[in-house]
Image (cartoon, rainbow, N blue to C red; front, side, top):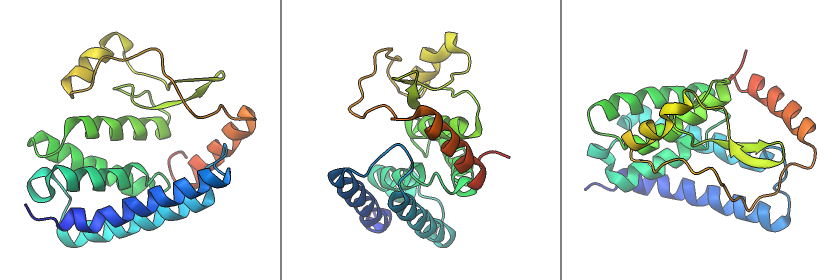
Amino acid sequence: MDTFWEDKCRPLVERDMFIRDAIVKRGDLNDAYHPEMEKVHLENAHKLEELIRKNGFPVLSNAGASGVKLSWLIIQHSISSADFMRECLTQMRFAAASSDYPLDLLAYTEDRIAYFEGRGQLYGTSFDWIDGEMKPTSIEDKDHLDARRESVGLPPMRQDVVSHERPPADPQKKEKEFQIWLKKTGWRP
């Protein structure tokens, strides 16, 4: 299997994790989207977008499982690039329809975008601090959630979620900043 996508995406993912770890060690990863993280995510999204433009979208048949997973991590973190994430979701859907993209990764991206757009998620993969507890964000048709999860290879939904992060110090401030960010990045009108 050609390692093109692995070779191109691995350094971007490693840099993302390195910067995040450095921010955590400094104690600077706070309630807001850290500007250094946003900068790395925007740069990585731009680099991946260029790679896709020149080489096509990374799918199982051209990137292998590892290349797909690495490129997917970059896409998942490209939250400040709403149009890019939406286009990638479209490509994931097309590829998944041909069994050329992992359904579980597609599910995570579907939910992440639904959350940012203010819609209920389908698979229960998106969590946030709600009333001081880490909980899944709004879910569409909860009665069929576990069936949908099973259809994409996810385990049944667990109600008890353990988070090693702390809740926001000022939830109202965090929510206000989040709403501003959603508009700035094109997730909401």
